[in-house]
Length: 208
Image 1 (cartoon, rainbow, N blue to C red):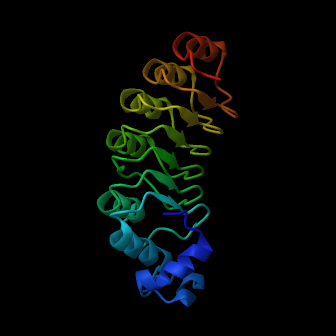
Image 2 (cartoon, rainbow, N blue to C red):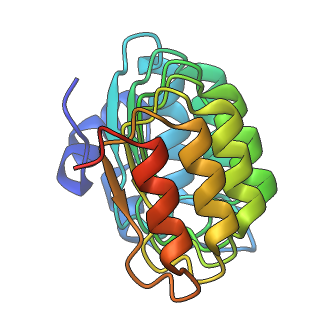
């Protein structure tokens, strides 16, 4: 299945039983109607068995404030067990949640409510991850990278741009657990020193 963007979502509204006009309506706390949440939930339930790739990049309304804030991601974990590629870039309502076991690509860039606990839950359930993008996840600290070290041994690409709380200790941990790394972005991580470069040189021979 192809990636879904806003236009594709309109085409799928018949599947989700949601009027297309509702996609443009703001969230109304009085009736608990968050149209994007209902669309994503119903699509995951009805298409979850064969859904492989899904992009909701920039859909800042994805989530459901009348339920738990991590509602959308739990919906994926429960119904889309075969999903391999998930892009939630900029879905700022996503918080700490669990992962999907077959996931290989996960983009959580600018989901700035995610903490080390969320990373632990995600990577514990996604041990086959090959690409993880965490740009702008500003709450992440070294302990989050320790969880990546422990569970993401297949990781090939890791983006930590603007994760400004990360230090050399966290980078060393990733290097020791992710020997297959080929791409690593640390732009904007101002606390790093030469110690990180040394660890990368010693532990990540495939780094390009």
